[in-house]
Length: 265
Image 1 (cartoon, rainbow, N blue to C red):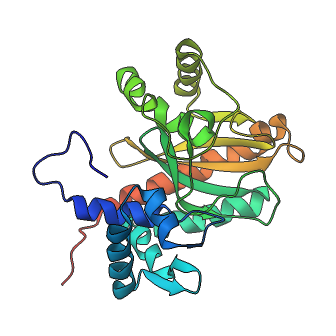
Image 2: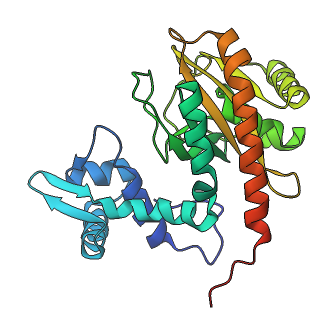
């Protein structure tokens, strides 16, 4: 697909390859050549060459009814997480938090108007929306997203939320600009955010910021609960203090991690 507003160094072939990878979604693990070409907006010969290239590199495989991605695609996302080292720093604190709350806990970062999950420790519960590393949700309707948006200047918030979501989720809460800014002012004042079924029925969560050694918000961490099992009061009064303790510990450890020279002998 031709793209507008691209510079002279833009590599269209690379962009098309990424488009093909992205068309494989939950519920569509195997797709025919025609389905891939249609979903990616490409001509069949172009889609075929890309799929065969991905197959040669080990990122895709041929199936009886079409093509499927291989687990090697996960390396593309894990390279980002590993390059940060955030998972290694946060993991023991997330495990501690989950052990004490009995609820799942995740870390996310902002990507356009969405949040993207980069770390997670889950407990086996039936929830409305499935979450895993790489899952994206509209930021404004999540506690993680509210924390991340509240850390931005108001003018930047306006620009970010104007971008279309790539999550494929239709959130329940659709605030006016005035309601949005009022909600973010509350988050800035409190230093944490709580959402109650604003994204989807049954999803209730509380989140806090993660900061680097300079005090900049680099991510957000949450405790996620099912509304039928955990009240807003319990989330705020029991889980929030533990969340804030874990967020502080992760931030402190991350500041120490950043202070160590990252060099390979």
